Image (tube, rainbow, N blue to C red; front, side, top):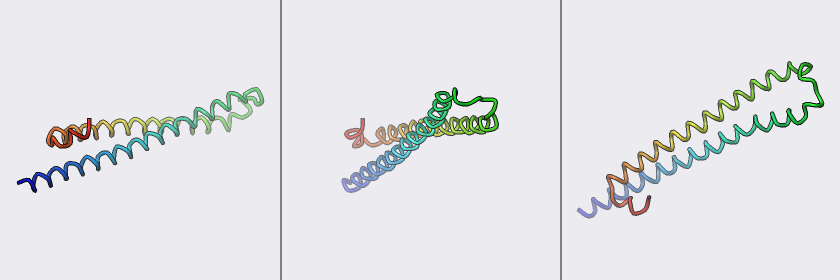
Length: 110
């Protein structure tokens, strides 16, 4: 009986390790999303800082694609960040379920 219990406990620990690895992946996706969000903000701040050196109407053919690209990057960055937050909550629910089923896990994870 104890051998079966040890196998079940080791399987539960392996499940939690797998879920935590997935959670780390979600955190790295979130970090990437935050970096993607920072890019349009830095580009726009450079354009605002140098706006006295150009006339917006003369460079409108360049500004429209740039603004469209920045909006696309903002949408993509928010998609990455929000998606990773949702996945991390999902992984936390999985971990709580495993903790509830296997008391051995509760000793190691808060």
